[in-house]
Amino acid sequence: MATDNAGARQPLAEPAKSAPRRIWLCADDYGISPSVNAAIRDLVLRGRVNATSVMVVTPSFTRSETLSLGILNAGDRRVAVGLHLTLTAPFNPLTKEFAPLVDGAFPPLKDIMRAAFLRKLERAALEAEIHAQVAVFSAAFGRAPDFFDGHQHVHLLPQVREVVVAAVKELAPDAWVRQCVGAGPIFQRLSDPKGLLVDWLSRGFRRRARAVGVQTNPAFAGTYTYAADADFAALFPRFLGSMPEGGLIMCHPGVVDAELERVDPLTSLREQEYAYLKGEVFPRTLAEHGVALA
Image (cartoon, rainbow, N blue to C red; front, side, top):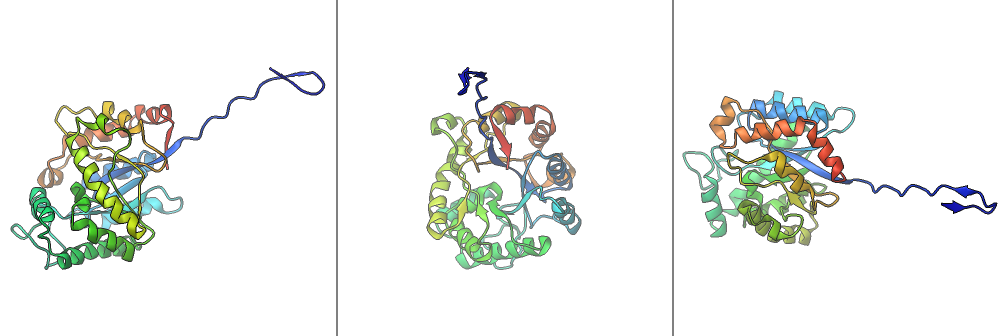
């Protein structure tokens, strides 16, 4: 207890509570299938995600799906909308010049990675495809993307990252780009080989972005093994532990439909993520970790 000048006893002030750390929770793959799109929009309306990245080369990226997402930002802004750059199978490029192709489609991830590390991708063809995807996004939403990332993290690959950073600088200078250097000590992620790979790739990507003045998120989380027995509800609190202000957590919520089964191997785990994010444990977990959505 403290006293004032007259000697009256005054109660001590309550210690100020620290403001929550504001982060991005980004639902990837809007456009991959109608049921995934609907699940992401539902989470936006519930205030459970505040960013989504859009694939513009998919059959399910339609005018109606675009309008349904765009209208969520009418009035108060609910969600940042970014471009989910896509350069891998089974989707088709927007440009005729892109190479290599497999039966007219982008190659599988392992093939695009091999070509990128051997520096065998054609820069002009990469530039044309990336510019085309930005143009389609901008025409659909009436503005440039708020941010950029990549399906299967292709934007981090050698050669690709050089063109992506240059395209953002030229076409969307106010946008930021996802980098995937993880939050917290690296030894905590030794059981997540995918996370370690994108962390390593991001270090070169982040240096290039900084060199030309392109913004990036300060930290990243959200990767896991995607094994059938993965427990997203148990994993998610770990993503929050060392996440700083402005950090980004990636997620893949959705509902399985025939189109998703046709185009992507990540199916039932999307439903597990969706159930967790729309449930009541999720907001309590954010509060317990002193985190809020930006």
